[in-house]
Length: 177
Image (cartoon, rainbow, N blue to C red; front, side, top):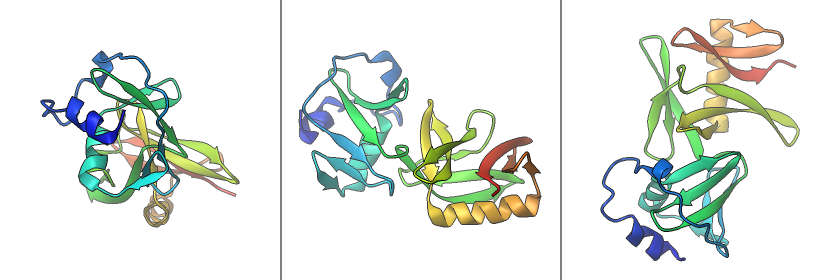
């Protein structure tokens, strides 16, 4: 399968997020998608620079177990991720709650459906946040430092962890050394 075939098979699905949970096609081997630690997308080793194409692919992401896939009604392709598919690039405070902004044309609030967790990556702990349908996002470095400053100002610390408060829920943002 190539990129143009993937795009073609998604025509007619105008919803923001097609019903990928209902699609269970066979796995298509031989091609590789990769989303690196900086949120860059690659197909068979070549960078995907077209943001509209990345947004289209993000709309058909599906998580099964700990693995991500691009799913169309007829094919499924494994997506390797260094951390997570979405990159959180900024945030806003709206009525004392935190709205996270992603690199893939999707924003959401940090709430009971969009919780965070810490994962060990290389030599540090990185917060991942559920963006949608159990699909996670990582926070870019700039935004992370601003969120840490906010968490420190909110003074939500417990058991050597730092939390952000949004929708009356504590969301872990880091481990205190």
